[in-house]
Length: 103
Image 1 (cartoon, rainbow, N blue to C red):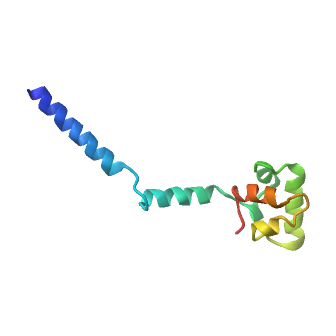
Image 2 (image 1 turned 180 degrees about the horizontal axis):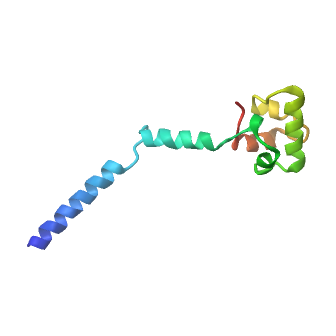
Image 3 (image 1 turned 45 degrees about the vertical axis):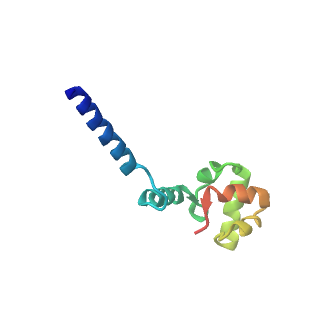
C-alpha cells in the first residue's frame, strides 16, 4: 500500500512538472528561440569571404562578387538589392536570405 501511494505521488509530480515545463505559444521560450535564430544569421555586410562561402548557394566567386558590390555601392539592405550582385538571381537571393541579415 505504501509503494502504491509513493508511485501515485511520483506520477502526479511528473505530470505536473511536464505540464509546467512544456513550452506554450507566446511564452518566453518561444521568444528566446526566435532571438537565437536571428542571432545565428550572418550579417551580410560585415561577413568575411570565408563566412560568405559557408552560406548554402554561395561559392567563392559569388562571395567575391558580394564583397565587391558592397565595396563599390555600399551595404546591401534587402533581398531585392542582393539580386543586383552579378550571378545572384531571385531564387538564390531568397535561399541566401534565410541565412543572412541585411543590417
